[in-house]
Amino acid sequence: MLTTSDFKRGIVIKLDGAPCLLIDVTFQSPSARGANTMVKTRFRNLLTGQVLDKTFRSGDKVEEADFERHKGQYLYADGDRGVFMDLETYEQFELAAEAFEAIRYYLIDGVEVTLGIFQEQMVSVDPPQVVELAITDTPPVLKNATATAQTKEATLETGLTLQVPPYLEVGEKIKVDTRDCRFVSRA
Image (cartoon, rainbow, N blue to C red; front, side):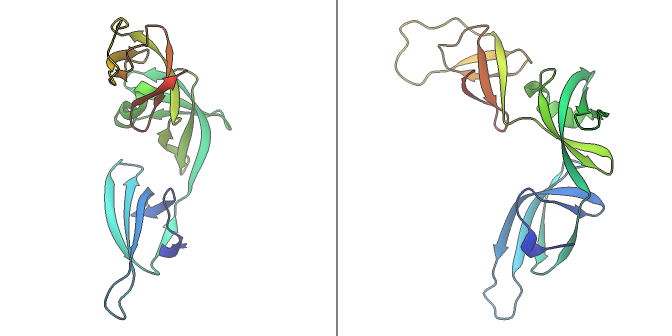
């Protein structure tokens, strides 16, 4: 059992029988005497993907979820679902279409990911923070461009489109931040 004093970002607790990842935790001390400290949390239900808020009193106890993180590998897309393999047990899992849609553009065959396992079922997949992808389509390099920060749209090998600097050409590999879908640097 965990108490509210153990709460911090990244912990997975069990609420209403579902694993919930704590995204944000804030402690609020009351101004009235004798009142309990309030612990405000924002969490993501790993089964449904919902982001919810809940307030606990200081000292409340919650159950820690039977949640494990394993190294995994993206194998291939099966229609609108993704197929992943646990690198420890070599067991294969399918990720539902809704959850796969959010990460599909960052995955190429063989990339290592982190699998979230709850009660022997895969409930989440975390792609690496930075992935290397090749540019397949972009306008030509602009000659004599001004010194202002200009960007152009590029399409990557996975179908992802994003803004990149004007000096990049088709065939170059770039690094992309998967948290906010932005160009980081050349690979």
